[in-house]
Length: 570
Ligand code: ATP
Ligand code: MG
Ligand code: MG
Ligand code: MG
Image 1 (cartoon, rainbow, N blue to C red):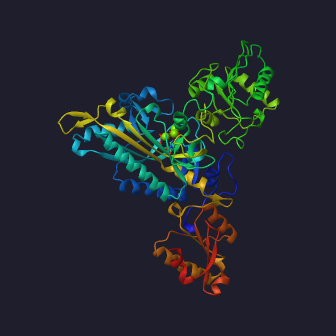
Image 2 (image 1 turned 180 degrees about the vertical axis):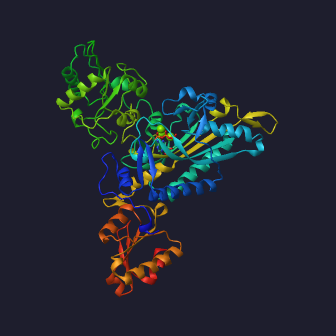
């Protein structure tokens, strides 16, 4: 590819709304552009990476015996009513009507569609087990889309669904998928961890998440430094031996504040609470002042920090010092009404207010009182709150398996596998004739990979101050061919053209920078773009029939004879 015939949309400035490095670099390197909240256009270089990730996922799925299909993004409501999820799903499920006023959704996932397909197509035990997958656009109306493609509303997922007549068969496919996921993330060159995950509301017996380790990750994962034990924080809590530390209810204190009616009083209360946070603590307050009703749960902290000291840098599990929420939001997140004793954990106050105007007052008032309350954003931060409630597991705890102590790290969920059991197949009556000729409901597994999220996750792990450092397997191009001042030198032009033809013919993906740009501009763009190998063609080295090869990943430079280049790149 010649840059003169390509779209290089690099930016010098970091867009102000890009909070994490992968989002910043994807914007700066011209990989994606935002259309609207959570909606992104993939520019050519971004798309090349996305397609490579997709292809690795596809190859490993095929290798593991899964079969590719493609289902519609638009799904009709009847299927969701049949599975019972039409009523259960919150606003994340985008619903709409067609011209006949019939209800539809934009598919956030495809259990319903695949179960419907399989119950029609598969009739006999002889056709089982079967594992069908697709790589398809999903839509989830995320509460707060953020971090670019990392948490988008429209994103690309690989989702697979397997069907079985026995738990044993399900376990076999589940194990094969587990292995396929390990293969995928290894081939992608990522530092990842499979962790036990909670099966949660969907039910089922077994689930693992695959996390890419990164400080910006929204999840916390727990693992042992002396064994294979690894779980996400929710599962680790569930697995932790009870009684290991005082139960939340024993560790909490309450500060009654019948008089706290004003901002100052509430602030004062917070200060009282802050002084006590050596222990886990819940503070509840409620004002009876009808004009300015304020109630809040809770100051929920553990550790020995002063309230105004708590910042993301100090608390690896906390992204922001304070979170504000409306009553409804708190109910959604905590599962408890404001004022009730919510779950206790490693988190920060959730301030609940009944009137938006008053909430604004409170924020200002609190600011004035020095609560360090900058950068607070409910939508952005509340998920962390949700994730870190009631930590009964902390770093340094003995591992439940007996070997080693627990380490807590942040992770980006890039894959999730699940034994669903008969949750969908029962509700939708998906069965086959078994060996005895009887109708039997199938048992199911489902297996997701966040294909587009992986692109961002890979950047979180592979970058430096100059830009992206793509693992070779997913780099948009393998080689950047950078001739210096080619337009002034026929000799350079000829050498570069010859190398370009030779390398392209040999199957290398070469980005030939034939723009009339200063060398500095070209180097900067190729580094930002993260092309792993740069071949620099310059006058002085050409005198000796040589070019320079720079390895973007290691920084190493070497001089090569023109006729060695191909061999060295291989
Ligand atoms: P999260 O906890 O991050 O919201 P999830 O558990 O809701 O993810 P799953 O239903 O398990 O997601 O979907 C499978 C995979 O799809 C996830 O492991 C993740 O990699 C990816 N994914 C989920 N939501 C998004 C999103 N909004 N943007 C990009 N990728 C996503
Ligand atoms: Mg989600
Ligand atoms: Mg999740
Ligand atoms: Mg998940």
